[in-house]
Length: 106
Image (cartoon, rainbow, N blue to C red; front, side, top):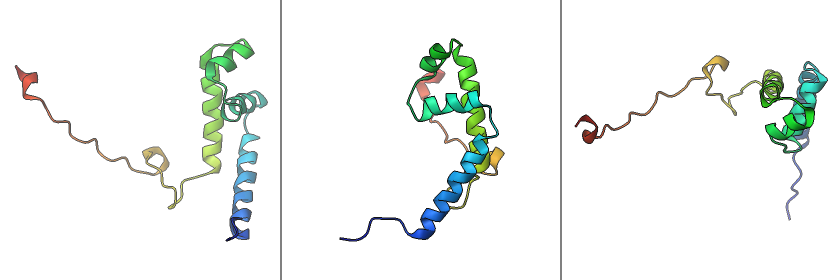
């Protein structure tokens, strides 16, 4: 049976990425980090987090967006994982044409 363990190089690269991600999360407030982990690791919904903290859903959305932006800065797109977002240097395909139903013009 072949060894299922990743090669040492892949482990080292993954460790480097985790270190960079942890460093980026240090840039956000502890509350933002806590809310982000409640959602991403514990699987809590925005409404559940908001109720637990006694706040509305809107600040929860903002905290999670802040954390996601910090993490995106630590993990820029690469050729192996390109972005479609034009703001991050990617390109978006033009929308597909929608066939017009002749009955719409009646």
